[in-house]
Image (cartoon, rainbow, N blue to C red; front, side, top):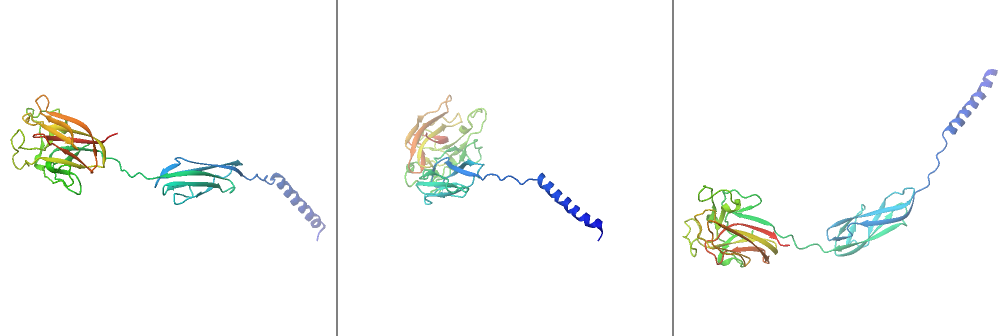
Amino acid sequence: MSTFSMFRRPATIALALTSSIAIMACNPAPTPQPAATVTGVTVTATPATIKVNETTTVKAVATGTNSPAQTFTFKSSNDAVATVTAAGLVTGKSVGTADITATSTVNTTKFAVITIKVEAADTTPGLTTAKVNFQTAAATTPVGYTANTGAAYTAASMTGWVTEASAGTATPVPLDLTNNARNRVVDGTNVVAGGDARQYTQIQMQCGSPTTGNTCNAPATNDPGAFEYKVVNGKYNVTVSVGDADKRNLNSSHTINVEGTNAISKFVPTLAGQFKSATVMVTVADGKLTIDAKGGQNTKLNYVDIVPAN
């Protein structure tokens, strides 16, 4: 071995050590960050009162040092009243109260509690809103209205035409008034343009005896009829219109009763006033709104608006 090699190896080792020390000096070890701590938890829910089968969300917030993680576990004190998911979604199960506890996962000794109240679910369905236009099948139905063309009442639908004598009873007798529907076509003389579209059509509720006019020609029905319409029991404002757009047909004494409450009484049309409308407030208790023409003669119904009363 040469003398040069013997001196070269220690020098190489010394250089490597010097480089390592230099690198360590340029890259010091990171300073440890203090651990996050949780000093308190708050919890809210909006709303805090719900009904059976409704939901609300519990929101928790952890306070502390070094930005603690906002992670929690949730627990209900009474799952029979209200359950809660891992995400804080609460569902009402039965009437009562349940305490929902939110616990920090950073510090399980820190938690908050909120009481959720569960009330009975609404059992009354919304009241009925309807607009019905009485017309022939071929007539154009006014916007926002449903056409009624005189079909007889059915027990399944609880809607349709019945005999006047059976109106409002527990056993209404179906009556087909399809052939009593009319659509007045503008001719410029007897039927003029520019009127309410709903009043160019009608169903003749009373046709012939005991009207002041002639009996209706076949295939029209001369038996007087009444209209039944299925609604949710409750209080309603009901608007009705009677009349005939044909100026030659003024031989009526229009009368309309809604649930036994008189809305229009013996209205006799003239060339200056062929129509009359009125609104009455009534209460329905049997699931059917009843409209009849008892006391009238040759009554002709144009349309009905049914709106829940405030």
